[in-house]
Image (cartoon, rainbow, N blue to C red; front, top):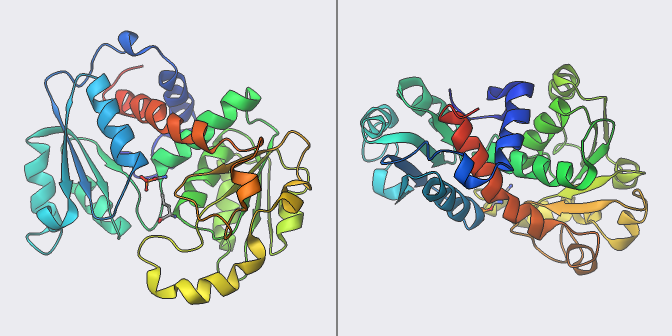
Length: 298
Ligand code: CP
Ligand code: NVA
């Protein structure tokens, strides 16, 4: 099995990964003992690289980090040759890529699990940490309202999938052209979301919400669109005034890295409602849970 999207886990798999994420390390029985895990990065990373490397070590394995240009997907050799070769060295192949299709192609030829460590389409490891953080906070996401403000991007898609599985109400406040396609809205409902609302008004999106999420307006690979995006998203920053419309106990979340003064105000991200550091730390626990699950631990 692979982890290219949250939907590869299904609702039961998500619950099991969240449970494994909180299981003491010594009770996980070192499922990667004596084995390698390939970590290939076409883009920069702090949280993902460090959390997955440490999680591999905690499970008894050896992480091998490689920059994207060293393996050269479709430059130095075809993705399929890389996937087949690495599957002979490693228990798991994990990759952070520009094009999601590279993950699909690795998975199509690999005899070992493939993990998407962020693509242009999704960021499932982030979605698991987001869910773990909210479940820690609220006990469960059933009937809770999770709001996303800003760009409907890779992080938003994985968040939507995991929250839908956990029975949350979903609200998306995104500008036209950067919002959730209609078939995606329907898909979230089919996955189990209690309700799904899309609006171009960020105030309506966060009204009474229990968790307010956002992310950068300029994802990696979109740098050429920066000036245009800063204009389009200007009214979508999460400010203290916006947070005041959420539930009185609402938390603020952001996958990081954050751009203070753009998608989030300093007072919000560094304020009492912010859970971004816990969320970042949960990247380690949820990565360990996900790796253990992929190695067959139940
Ligand atoms: N949130 C996240 O994936 O961070 P990095 O890009 O630092 O890995
Ligand atoms: N949406 C961002 C997330 C970074 C962790 C990006 O893709 O750059």
